[in-house]
View: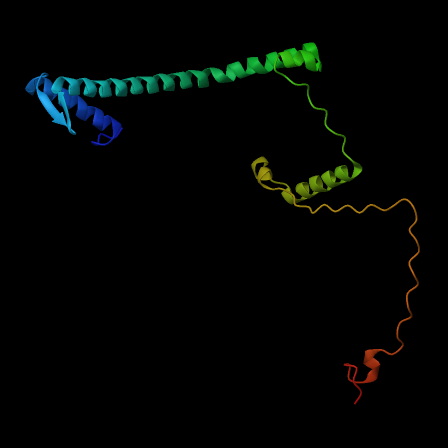
Length: 186
């Protein structure tokens, strides 16, 4: 930590020095006026010692918290395996019975909604585009590339549509035949 006067460690060191110097050179019964309040040096030293005690308690608590976090991190992988295995055991034992699973704080697995033909076609198009965009590359390079498809699916109706009206006959005169190509005769 920094040891400047305004850092926590620096202020604690300052207060400890003030306490030490006061014990050597001041009388605890000496009357003093600080910030407009009359008090004794002994009362001030008690407050200063309280500051040091609080700071030391905080430093000890932080060290204990660091140790607890380190212990949790060290044990977490093994405990995660046990937790996952026990959850799987409970699910296997009781199946999808919601009333029993809720006693364990678990919910039955959701059944995915069936995909429509359109959704399957879009997924296939995206999958093929991704494979084409990735090409033959290393595993790490493959993960950085994604296919980009604008999925538009055209569905043809199963009933015949009404016949379209007959087109009007085209004009017999073409613009090129009239002379200069812009439609104006000379």
